[in-house]
Image (cartoon, rainbow, N blue to C red; front, side):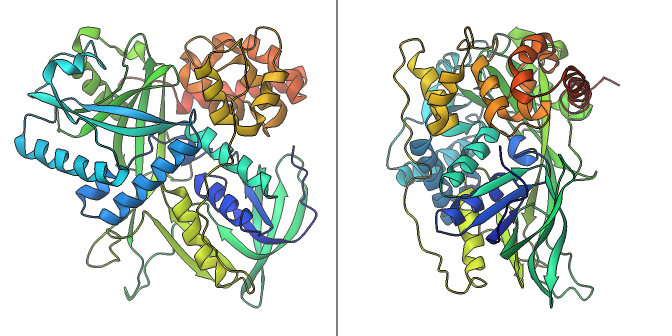
Length: 518
């Protein structure tokens, strides 16, 4: 566990423990900066654990005419596939009903040819109608002459954040969750650090830093009254998703389909032992700082898509294990703002002693971090931003074990890196088995409780593992065994465990249950 308060001054203080903040921490630490990260809640508890779990190769950028952004996204996706197999894995897609419109078909195939050139490999991209039966045997014939294939990538987004933070620690960085910034420390108009509060103990301390980096995702200030600003127009979008048991919606590959009502794309793919369906994107009108949840209208919209595409399965509300929604910041282009159509999906700005970043994606988090550090270099005399072309993560080899299949060892190594041997050594009898309905081992619960800065039960069940969205009722039926494994590791007495369980179940019902019908 991390001791708080950190007993020294820092070159860089990073505020925000999502994927962007974690990326900044890693890229700064590996370049020799003494770096501290603080997160007011849990690592990745916002958008970075509520994404679609896909690491896109930039097709939508190409559709918008930005070859540069497509090239960057493809390069980062391929680098992560090489660096973290078992955490970031290839995900074949079948575009199930994109072929009936010849213009749409030819346009998509042309874009895929460009992606082939960027990846240096050629994939068969057009297949006959009956080929869809392999990834989706229960799908009726789609409204097309055939389907289009494409290979993207998927990940466990919360574990990706933790892996990046772990890699940063190997370079001397420190990351603390449940530490809030009470105020920034300023002197003569320049930021010199922050007053921090440990939410576990109530302890407060002032930390000095040569530079503070705000990676909380807060947008820049609104346009000035006279409209003379370089700020782009901003939108908050909420993306909502469903999770179903793999035996109720069985897929061997991802399927992208067009919604029967409005023709928008909806996808379904196998993920961690369940099937994930998404996404309904709408503007987020409510408090963007509150934990979002799916509405009944969004739920019905996604259900209509899978019910139409997989009619023989007769899917109903009761088949849905859980739901989740995440809010992300996007930038609109337009004549009265700065178009970022040829830039990346993040924005960096600064003032004396403070650099801020908003936006960004799972796939391109390193690019955002490097842009932040280029801006930071202007405020760090004597430090230069050097180019790093090494792997995303240090090489981690799967241990040789006869009691576990190679795919299980690969998955554990991808998620836990150099800690995988310690995790396996800590396992008790029977804990190297998968929890029913998931790919998670019981041993991962013990290791998380022992070594991964778990403060609340939702940290354990929604981010260190994903059981809360993989199991019915958030895993309530298995809570007895979870308690037997984790209570002592966490150091909680009976009253603490029961309070945590009550809080977790209440929060799960608000954020992840099927919304009631009208």
